[in-house]
Image (cartoon, rainbow, N blue to C red; front, top):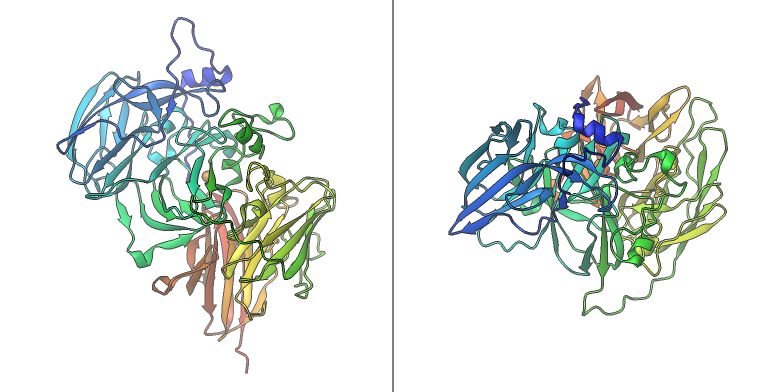
Length: 635
Ligand SMILES: [Cu+2]
C-alpha cells in the first residue's frame, strides 16, 4: 500500500537534523497557515472563477506556532500566505474555472486534479522551476474532489516528506446548495516508511493544536473527509453514528441513493479517497473523531522522541483556553478532532439516568514477565461465565478479554477494576453512551467533570443503556500500545430483549495483534496466533461477529474460504447497526475490516467440509486463520 522510497531532499535533511537552522544569508521560508477550508479561494463573478495558485517553499509547524517545524512545499493563492491544506477550490456546478499556476520552487512539479470532474486522474500539468501555466475548464459533476502535486514521479499514495503537503480540496456544489458543511483534509508528513516517522494532521495541524468543533444537540452536521495521504485511515466517531452520504476516489464522486447510505461508527478511507457524512448529536459533552490507528492518534515520535518524552506525556496548553489545555492531558496526538456538544438553547434538562438493573465487573490483572501480560475476567451474575478462550499451552496465550453481554434498553453498570500496576481507561466502542463514561481520560465528559483515569488499584463504574443490539468492542483508551497489544480488549455484545446469548450459533471472531516469542509480531484470532479448529454443523445458519481491534491494521482483509475459494455470506450489520433491508444481500466472503470496525455476517454451509476464516494485512505477510470444521447436519 505504501511506497517506502525516501526522497533525499537535501535541505529537508539538514533541517531535520537541526530544526530551524538555516543559512543566515537566506530568510527562512514563510510559516504555513493552517487552512480551515471555510473560505473559497479566487474571485467568482458571473459564473467564472478566476484563481491564481502558486507552489511555494514554506515552513510547517504541525503543533504550536513556535514549536518544531519542517521545510515543505505547499500551495498558496497569489498574494496570500502559504497554506496547508492548499487554498479551497469551491464552486457551484456549471462554473467555468480560469486558473493560473506558478511554480516558485527550484524543482519541477506536476499538478493533478485541476480539470473537469470526473476526469482522467493521470492528467497532470507539468511545471518547470519558475514556470507559469494557465488552465480553463468547466467544474463538472457536484461532489468532493482533491487536487494535489508532486515534485517527483510519485503517485499520490507514495508521496513523501515535503511533497505530502501539496494537497487541497476541490468541492463542486449542486445548483442552489448553501454550503454549511465542514471540510477536513487529512495530512501525513513522513520521513521514511515506518509509522514512527510520520506526523499526522487535520487541516494543517496535529492534535491538540488543530481546530476543536462545537455543536448543539439536534444540529444536523455535514462533513467532507479527504485523504490525500499515503496511508489508509480508519476514521472513528465516539458516541455517535454517521451516515455515509457518498464516496469518491478524488477524481470521480458517487453520491449514494438514500437507501444505500450506510451507518458507520468507523469508516475506512483509502489514499486519494474521500467520503461525505451527515450526523446529529443527541448527547452533550466532549467527543472525538479520530483515526483508530494507534500510531495516528498518539503523539508523533518525530515531534516527541521517546528520549524526550516524560512518562506521562501532556500535549500542553498551546491551543484553546487554559481549561481546554488542562483537559487535553490525554496522551493523544495527530489525527484527532475534538468535538464539544452543548445543549440546544431550547433544551430541557436531560432525564435522570435510570438506575442500573444489570451490574457486572470487568477485572484487569497482570502476570509480570509472562504472556499474556494482562488478563481480563468478567464477573456477571446474570450470565454464566463463557468459556475463556485461553489455553495453558505455552504457545497459545489468550490475548483477549471474555465477551461482555448486555441487553438493548437495559441499563448496565460495569465496574472496571484495575488490579494492574499501570493506569488505564476503557472505551465502550460504538455504544451510544453518555460522554462521561466514554473513557477518554481528561477529555470525554465535560471540562468540569472529565472521564477519570483508572489508577492501579482503582476502579470506575461505567453506566450505559445501549439503544441498539449489535456487535461492539470494549478496549483500552490508554494510548499505550502495550495494552492494546496485550489483550486489553474484548467483544461487547448487545442482544435484543428476551434473547439469550447462544455461543453455539453466535460466534465472535476478534482479530488482534501481539508481539512475543517465538512468533514475533503476529495477528491473533480470539487471542491466539494458531487457534484450534471450531466444529460447526452444515445446514445450520451461524451469526459471525467480526471485530478488528488491532493496533494499526488499517487495511486488514478478512476472507472465509472453502477449497481456497471465498464462499458467499450475508452481511447483516456494520459497527453494531443492523443494515437496512435494501443493503442486506449475499456477497463474496472477502472484505476489508479496518481497525475499529465490526461486521456481523451470516453463513450456512450446505455440505460438510473444512472452511477457513483468515485475516491479514496487505502490507504485512502474516495471516491469522481459524479452521471451521463443518460436520454433517444434526439429525
Ligand atoms: Cu490513520
